[in-house]
Image 1 (tube, rainbow, N blue to C red):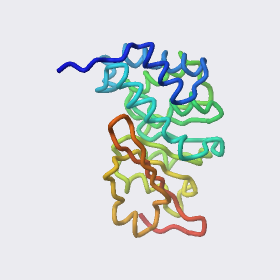
Image 2: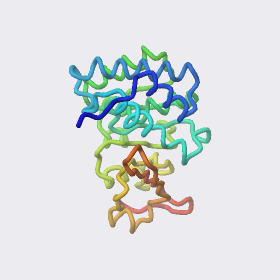
Image 3: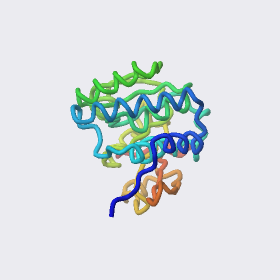
Image 4: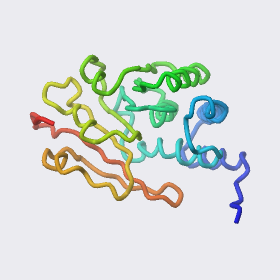
Length: 221
């Protein structure tokens, strides 16, 4: 049975209302979707190709963070394994005060990210073209929150909390399924600060927020 799709105009109207977007922000998301759809075959950016799916599973899912965390209290975020820019670029559009670092090693995806940044007129967005471990070892950005929807092992992510790491006071927000359970090492080190469950259409999703307790000196990971 063929599922009837919403007309494009209705998809965008619902998105704007649900997320409280200004007309400028809506226009930026529309341009983003157009670029994603046109460049997808060339750059292998997403398996989701219909408009409703892109809006729901990429844009709305990325913006879910703002329901649980006051983004006005954060200044610099870094998106680990950014890919086509999720969740970093939707968060930048929604919260334009943010400085955003996109960590992405694939050259074609870097090229796409640069095009989106230029076409949308975004400022204070940087692309870091090396891997996660190199980022931790060689940079000193004033990051106060890491975000990632990428399939990176959580123990790799938690290397940011090593005592000697300059980023060990940052939060780490990890998009996971509702069935997610923290690795036993993460539990032992008491790194999970909160989990937030939400629905994305018919899907149940979860945000896992990790970080050191303020009084913690950190342990080896």
